[in-house]
Structure formats: C-alpha cells, structure tokens
Length: 319
Image 1 (cartoon, rainbow, N blue to C red):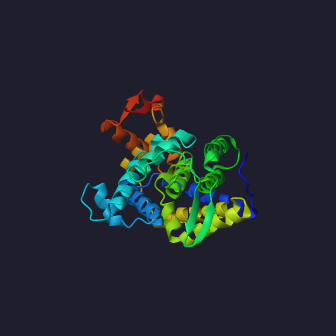
Image 2: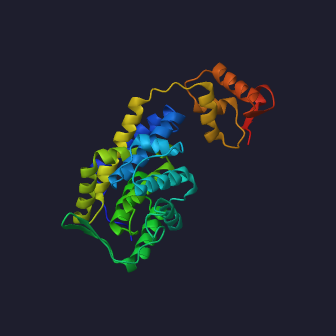
Image 3: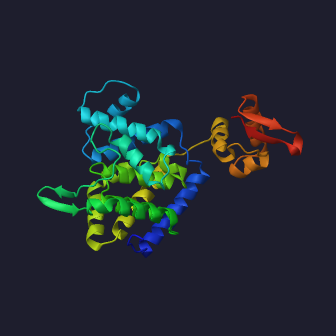
C-alpha cells in the first residue's frame, strides 16, 4: 500500500524552489564542496543528529575523535559518535532501496549500545515524553511486513524523489522498526535516498537545521500522526532542505582552479573517453584555451591519458 499523504500547492512550490536551488548548486559546482567544507559539514551532521538524541559531544570533541585523539566524555556518547563516523564513512556502500542495508547500517550505528543492533523489533513499544504517551508504534509482529511495504513504495512509486524521501523518513519514525536509534536512522536514510540523485546531500548538514528547529520537527511528526498522513512532515522537511541549500549557496562563493575542475570532471567522465568539447560543455564559463591548458596539465600530472591528435584527440582518466 502507498503511504497516505497529499501533495499540496505548498509542497509543489517547495519542490520547484528546491529544484531551482539544486540547479544553482550544479551550475556553481558545489555538488561536491571543497574538502575542508565537506569535513566540517560531516562533523556538523553527526553532532546535530546525535545531539537531538541527547548526546553531549561538541563539534570540537568529534573533530578530536576523527583525529584519533582522546576525549573526556561519557563512554556511551563516545561510542555513539564513533559508530556514526563509521556509518557516514561508508555511506556510499549502502543501497537505499534495500531493507538489509538499512538493518546493516543500524547494526553499525547502534553497535555496543543495544543488544538488538541491526535487528527489526519483535516487541511492542510506545514513545513516552514526560508523563504522556506520545506515540504507540505498530505491533512488533507487523514491523517486517510494514518495512517491506515501505521499501516497495520507495523502489516503485513514481512520485518525485524529494517527496518520497520525506515520506520514507516519516513512515520509518511511525513504524519505529528498531528498539532504539530510529530518529538518527530516519535522518540518515533520507540523506542516503537523496544523495543517489543529488550528490550534494552527502555533504549538506540538513541535520543541523533540524536540531535548530527541533521543537518544530517533533511537532511536524506529531501533527502527521494525528492527521493520519505525512503531509505536515513533508512540508516541514522540504522547508528545511530549501534552507540548507540557500545557506550553502550564500556562504560559498567558489572560484575553481585547474585542480578542482579536473577532480570534479572525474565524477562525470568516470572511465569513459571524452573530448575537450565534452569538458567545455560541463564547465560552460571557461574559455577553450583554459580547457586546453587544464587537459594538458592533467596529462602532464599523469591524471589523464591522451589519445589521438588535433580534432581527434580524446582523454581518459587513469584508474
């Protein structure tokens, strides 16, 4: 069954606005930000997602752990961060359309924290906040079937990926497939779903904005629970994504150097032969002479192999 939600005019406008911003990201080659920014954003993502769940480590402490330095903090918090670092380092190895990969990622994320790491729950659970029961999750015997249905929706439904990623995030929180770690898994998997089509999401700290709007995040989840569909949550998450893209574009005025262009084009060309014209079609703002110098430099640096001469010249990246 398809999860219940309605595509409103607001949601459609947000999709249009996000698509425009993604076009700007591609045009300015920010889909793979500079190395230092990628590292900073990854740290922000880990710190923010775990702080939402009560982790106390700061960005500085997480940076120290990444650099294999000792950190004074509760052992549970350190393990949570170390696990998250492992998972985010392997992000490209997970298939977002496979339940087994979701279980594997949860196993890594919750290793040493709960006995049932990587296993779908069989018990019945409820989420309590203060003295109030906030959410009663579906019966444990239903979890496997509900998750299979959710992954089938993700793989086969024709809706826009931006919308499907939000629906998946909400439905995972509603089903609550694991004993613990569902919040961080929902945010992680939405990132994974989106980065298959839009590489920038691998390095976009959406979780930072969720942390800064944590009350609104939980309110959107609660409102979707009460209305029986994920429409309020889709609207909230699309607004967060749009804000994250705006922040990236406003803070990065990137001037590409020859090394940047050659490295970026490797993701496009991969192991295919290409011409100078192909290269120019990707970097539309540079002159022919600049493209020629870039390719000559890459050949001299033993990054590219050159085939043929003059108009028949083609290039290929070395393995």
